[in-house]
Image (cartoon, rainbow, N blue to C red; front, side, top):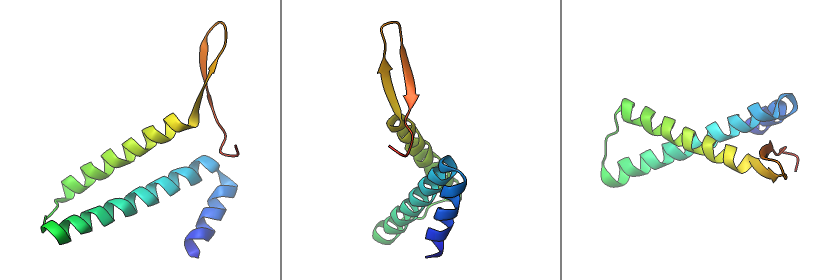
Length: 89
């Protein structure tokens, strides 16, 4: 309930910031789940450095994917240009 109120407040302020917050929260939660499962099933101990590296890698991958999805190639006679789609579409 509280998290949805935070999202609503962010959405009214800035859509880009709200989208980034959603990505950070969902990817972080997923990584926590993966690490806990790995620790429980395989008994693996993860170092703080390894966790930070995995988190940075996962966030960068997800942001690259988000940028690629958000672009739409518009072809004209003279050149190609990229147009970023709005989240409202």
